[in-house]
Every structure is written in C-alpha cells, then in structure tokens.
Length: 107
Length: 125
Image 1 (cartoon, rainbow over the protein chains, first blue to last red):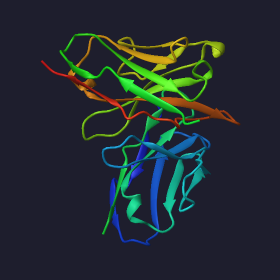
Image 2: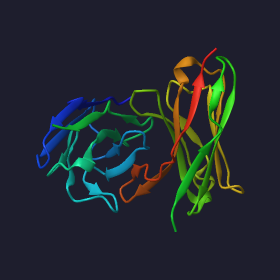
Image 3: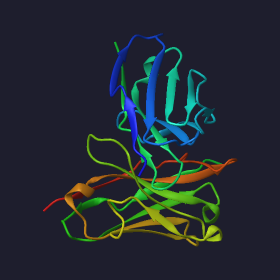
Image 4: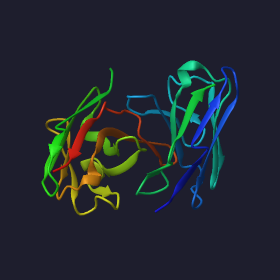
C-alpha cells in the first residue's frame, strides 16, 4: 500500500499568515492527490483534487501543488474559519490512503 | 439539486458480531455513481474502508486490508441505497463511518466529493 506522510502534525499561525502543509507519498503518485478539510465535529469536505484543482465553491485562498512524491497545500492568508484538520489522500490506485492529518490553529 | 447521502444503522455491537450500515442517496443518479465508505476512529484520522463501482462499470468492490474478508459493500439501485455489511467485528472497528460519492474526472482522477454526516459504530463487550 502507498503510505502518505503529512507534516507538520499541527501548527499554530496568526490570522493573515501564509500556511503551508506538506504531504509525501511513499512512491510516485503522479498528480493523483486530493486534499480534504475537516472542521471539529463535522464530516470532511473536499478542497482540492488532482493536486491543484479547486473544488467548486472553495475559496481561492487555498491552493495545491506538487507531483511525484511531494505535495503542498497552501493557505495564502489564514482566516479564523480555516481552523480545521487537513488531510491529503492519494487516488493513484486502491487501496486509497490518507495522510495522518495536520491540525491548524490560530495563534 | 443538492446531492445528499445519509448514513444510518450505527450503534453498540459486541466483538465478533455482525452489523449492517445503510446510506440513502438523493439528488443524483445513484445507479451511475461509484460509492465508498470511509471511517474515523475516535480522536484519530481518516481511513478508507472500500469502494463499489456502478453496475454498468462492473459493480465490483475493493477493500482496505484491515476489513478485507470481513466487510462487504453492496448496493440496491432500486432503493438508491448503499450498504456496508460488517462481520466478525473487532474493538478496533469502533469509528464514525462515512458514506461518500466516488467521482472521476478527466485523466482518471478520483475523489470523494459528497460526504454524509456519518454514523457511529462502537464495538465493545
């Protein structure tokens, strides 16, 4: 199975800061990488698919990049409503696997 | 039209027992949809459980290793309903179980874009 490793596991940043979360795959997955946001007590929500395509309705504050084994999710200007845990997930082949998550908090 | 999936059937189950979850879909053509289950143990991250294709695409299911041979995903397109049959349940199967759509876009990029609120299964004696 392909392992997905996210870093950091948590971060604290100020409103307006640029935030970057990284995700590394245990083997090349081309650009078959999705990002999800999960707010406390809620179901996950798709943010980005195919590495960099924003899901409909998602703010352009979010962006994704990468290919092969290394990927990033960037929040250009952190807002209070972005407080959540973020998960990467590969879709290269089944079984699908998720990263361990990155919890984002406001400083 | 708003696309919705609503899970049901969660509860307290004893180790070794069987249990079935349901997921009712609306707002999209369920028979054309690939569907999946994802679970989240208490205080932990997301774990993909498995996926079923539409019948026109073969109707087959794939599973994650921890549930393969114990869990079965099925669908009733006449009822717009997805099922997760869980057998030989273990304490480590305790989790919130989410039903999701499993979409594909150009270039065979798959993603899960519609999620239910989840249903909680607790496996404990």
